[in-house]
Length: 123
Image (tube, rainbow, N blue to C red):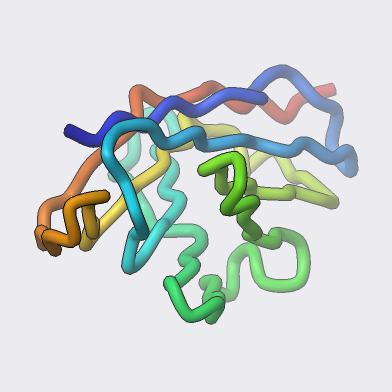
């Protein structure tokens, strides 16, 4: 079974920076796509970043140029670096994983979510 745990959220002033972490555990060999999503207060969840197993990244225009996604395979951890934060970035941020290859070599197209971490951008 795959478990995802986000951390690094908190309160930051507009223009500030924050780095979120997503630690994956379980019998994982690789993950096809890791993504970050966020849900602002009173709004639907939206996608903000994606990282494929091949190293490709993608972002929506709302965060492009401000956010970056990276990974440390040795630590089974994915990061979301957020710079030039705006009040509209305030949300609960979630880590998502799709397409897990286990240590047994079995590929499962299942989807997993973390519990979320709160990011508040306010002066």
